[in-house]
Length: 67
Image 1 (cartoon, rainbow, N blue to C red):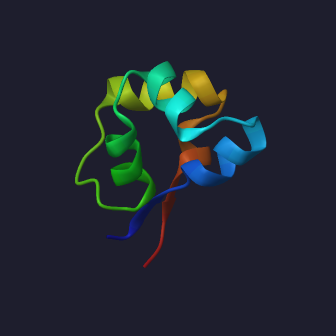
Image 2: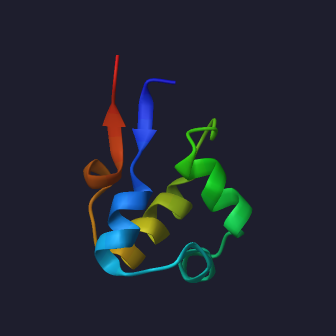
């Protein structure tokens, strides 16, 4: 997939664990792993909104396009 989601870097910068992050955005740690590993086929806007709220970032800070 050409779209990458960069959660790892932001979690390190914010000092958050995957478990704390998953709890804060309301998804399971397994689903966070799916996002982190590039296996997600889609991301709901409500999930993207929660991620941006918790990590205090913009969608462009998370989503990157690679050819």
